[in-house]
Image 1: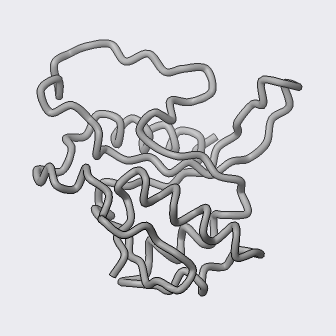
Image 2 (image 1 turned 135 degrees about the vertical axis):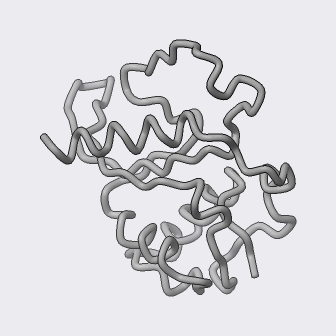
Image 3 (image 1 turned 180 degrees about the vertical axis):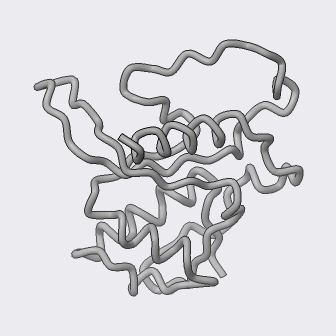
Length: 145
């Protein structure tokens, strides 16, 4: 129960946090990451990784998923304006990404490392490693160094 409250607080904080001041952080870096690259997360203090249940609408089963939420696309103009935020039924991932639980360790690697080789990510296949970094890159959360 305590973990559920903690996750809700993290989600609420990141969804209502001011975005980074530097608007250049909203644009993905020029190079798309590939397996041979070194990468690093950008704006780590604007990213929260949570593990929550997610309901599959097709068969109504629930499973644990990893959510990478960020405040990069939050609107500075509407911050603290008192509007009511209505969450969607299956979590609002409009400001983040959803991954299988098997990606948690790789995401934690990226969060803890200064820089990391894509090939060193703890995922079973090269394809999974590339898909993860490209998804993060497309949300402007990852730089190729």
